[in-house]
Length: 362
Image (cartoon, rainbow, N blue to C red):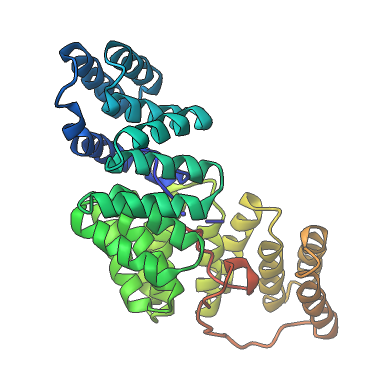
């Protein structure tokens, strides 16, 4: 599982839900900035209709915004600002081909319109043509370097492609322009974590939860990096806060189970793993670590039951790990009374190494 997330929702959406609310005002300001020069000779009534559309878009009323932009363009068919904004709204409403065609038409008329290239990038992302999207965002940046929106979109693409260093540079630039946006710190922290820079990741996640105490991904991932930085006691309240913020999410409970068990609190670990199993019954590692904890508590029959549940949901790659533990449970009535303090590992996918703190991507 992964926290945007991705790219950009709001007035200038993308594909990551976590960013929807934070970026709406930014999207509108970008439209105004980028397109102001295109409005010089527009019909006054067309300008008024477009401004009305911007208000609708900022409040999330995309259908109403579309009607206003269509009216603006009908009043002045050469008004490229209206054409670009209409294209963007159409893309956001799922009419990707239509929106793309409008923005490509705008580029023919106004090759230097950065917003039009940005619009093309959004369409290409929706079409899963990431290389073409990256080229379009790069062109938008070249034409208007001050706006963070195409940089954010390009950063998301770099992150998806695991080009962590390139993503970091773009996210850092976005943070400088949007210092109050907590989601940017979540994304930046995630990239630092993937680079193995746990100290920098901790700094960014702390900033995220300081600026937005309700950031689920901020608290969850801060807990992970605090454990990695040997700050277990600080990590626990962040996992607990994450669990409160997303009551249906199993990851905070799984991470709490790992934390309690590695510190010898087996009863607390048992309760946490039980919650993880309840909320995420299809994850084999939830059942596996619950079985391991039952075994350490001398509850062999319960351990066997959990192992059987793990077998039912384990993938082919996970099955050997389940069978290895099952053999140990049969061989030894009680698990060795050792408490491991293994650190969370950096893995390609959090679920590849068991147990490991769960960190959905932002």
